[in-house]
Length: 84
Image 1 (spheres, rainbow, N blue to C red):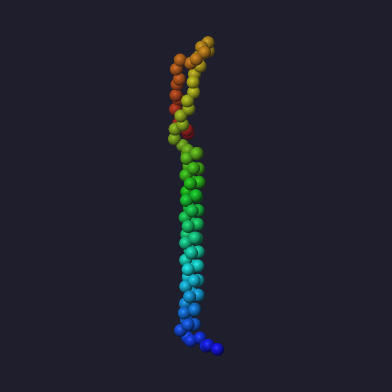
Image 2: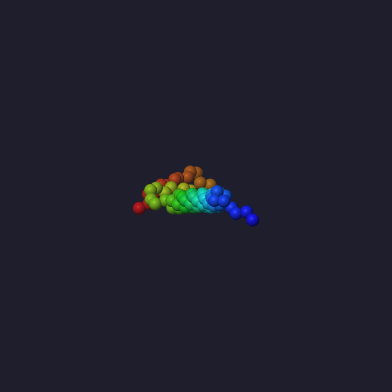
């Protein structure tokens, strides 16, 4: 029967600790990537919400005025209206 010496026991413990550290590093990196991805998609959602609903300013409406008795309009007029 072979009795392990102190140095092999230490090496074994060191190997276990290093594998735990490796797993911890991988989990930390995965968590960081997950948070960065989440922040990216939240930024996209906020950007689209701001783009789709202007908070004020000017709105341009394009309408064609039709004169009764003619088949095609002779000119078009663009009217720009400010939102209150």
